[in-house]
Image (tube, rainbow, N blue to C red; front, side, top):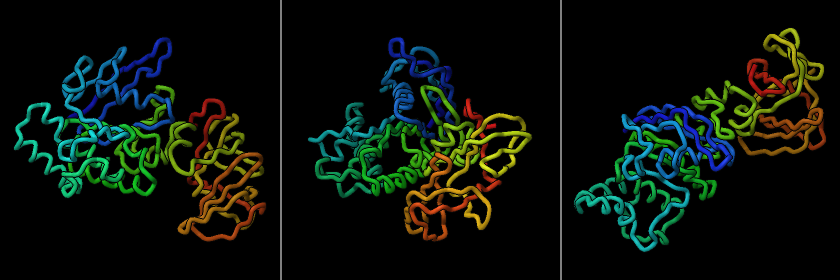
Length: 345
């Protein structure tokens, strides 16, 4: 295992700069997720770490070695792709052991490592099958097994669950988490799905337009987002943002006042759906648009002064479309963002 250090990394395609001087330190044995919208640069960054994409400037170090000019085969990494990239004519065992065979590893050692990985991933009974006879989840486990047998210093995952159905994705998330807890190999995991990042990672790197917006643990990002982008990207449903005015340490929304930071400016008051409280009196009047009962929770989509708002209730309510209800943001869980810059105040 090893740490991964990225310093002042830049990457351009012609005149278009896609990575703008990134700095990331990933600790030995840490699971780090790179998240952000499509085109934010997360997959490009992963491919540069892997050696599949040249860098323009900056350094990438794995362990004590700067690997800028090393080919992928010499970086001691293993990559798992979203497309599995399995050889259709080879068995599961042959797919898992192929890289070791190319490296001229002994037959006995290949068999030992393949058997060990198959035991970890519950693939032992499938070793003689071809990929076409496996489910999507089983194929992804084979791809993971192919990475495990190499015993790399770093695992790199490039959106490995995006081709799976919703139920299987949840199952595979659990398996990847268990795998990391067992092997403790340094892992970099790219995903556009913030729920995957929240449930899997020790730390999350939130990216937008080739820059890093914030790095932190899942709960740090959820509870204390640095700006409006992180606040709305992390969490599902996303944080509600209500336009208001800050003056003398109070934020005015409608005819309600909430404690805020010092200063005077136009702001957005951030409140997560679970932190909107149904008011018996007072509160902000909101019109119900759609009600979605999920059993454990009730999700309600509303409109307030032309703004979309989402509320989540653990209690069961019988709201109807068109009904006006009054909600109070929980004062203990509010965020105030500058209206223009989006920075948290």
